[in-house]
Length: 182
Image (cartoon, rainbow, N blue to C red; front, side):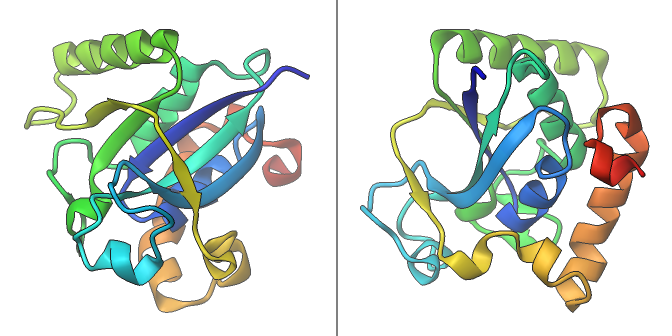
């Protein structure tokens, strides 16, 4: 099986991970940090807003099942790419909308997708998603991995993540993994 990686920041990594875990063609999703200047940052350091990192997910997918453009379509559906350093009540540079492209093809696809979405006028404000070359990914602590799956009744999960997952399922029902669709 061929695989490709996408590194995406769209607010809290728990939200993105919960959605991409259910997407057909995705083989792995890992929560972590990218885009900063501190090596091996801790969650507390990133939340302190001085490392430059964004909370991200690194999505490994099979490009023969799902294209990078389709990964991006989901990304732009499940978060607000028009708010600088914020998603809902989560505020700070670690919650910025960001795509860390791994190849020139990913960069081109990202720029084309943003241009198409801008032209469609889906949002009342401009898209502010940062588009930057991928450099390094730091895996978050184990308790952040599969957070929604392990804590579905926690208040943040119920109030913030569950509605995003429900919207994703409704919008992309044909793209759900078989075990989720049933």
